[in-house]
Amino acid sequence: MNPDHQPASSDQSDALAAFDEVRRKLFGIAYRITGTVTDAEDVVQETWIRWQLYDRSLVRDATAFLATIATRLAINVLTSAHTTRETYIGPWLPAPTDTTDDPALGAERDEALHFATLMLMERLTPSERAAYVLREAFDYPYSRIAAILESTEAAARQLVCRARKRLAGGPARVDGRDTHRTFLDAFLRAARGGDTAQLEMLLATDAISYTDGGGVVRHTARRPIYGRDKVVRFFAGLARWFWADIEIVPMEANGRAGAYLVHGSELVAVFTVTVQNDAISQILWMMNPAKLGAVANAGHWHPARSDWVVASERSPKAELPSRTITSSTSDLGYSRVHGSRRFEPA
Image 1 (cartoon, rainbow, N blue to C red):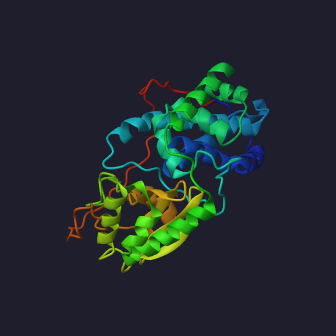
Image 2 (cartoon, helix red, strand yellow):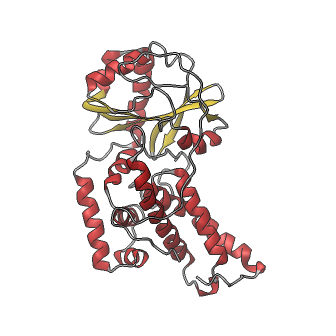
Image 3 (cartoon, rainbow, N blue to C red):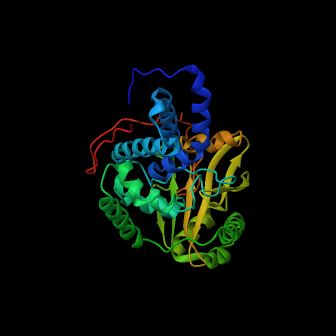
């Protein structure tokens, strides 16, 4: 990059048009690699700044150039984020993104988008994750992946191969969109009504319930709840107090059915499930206010106060003192952790 180059204002509209054409794709790449909406938006913004400052007369393929910048920035962000996630309070879940209008989130396929896959991808190195995303979701040839990652084509193939092997040890692939919607609707009806028999029918034997409160939503379940029996007891307890004033608003989160849980003007949670082999294997509550900001704004809500709780499986609803929520900000700093090197985006 030539930082001293100042592009003429006359071609700014062309630069904006080229960028807007691939903006959704850039977000899709960055989101799949980082797992958070805020970080993905920051990556897209930083890509735009670099695109503005670059001597664009040297660029032969704007789409490839912008995708390279976004991918390298996202890898750097993820490398830095690993340290924070290791000390995260409670289960860390990917931040939800509404895919109602774009089920594949800017990609050729909706691969590497579902919560089950994003959670498994946390076991990958940043370079493995980027290579897997580019290959499986965006159908990039290995030669292009190698160029983006500044490696050889053989090394790019090896990165994707290792990623596939690591992900193969996880749960089976998720069921289709219509199946997810059917199971989610049935589960919410049963949960709201305290129908334990129906809950047992819908849940897999080894079902797990995760609640991401980020350490700021008090008395959320800070550990996953394992097993159908414990999950059923947990939701039977919630039925006595949680759902009375909650409005359930259907939406689509990460390519599968989800629901906004809303109280008045407050977004309490994004709720979704993972359906595999005709049974619910995962229940996911996203309640961390820092992760709800983007989807809350889209619905003209604001994230709920920290005294909204999902009690742990042993705790009934309690009187809780009010607490001010302080939202964490995204860190675009770089570090050398997990054996990953810093990329210069362009």
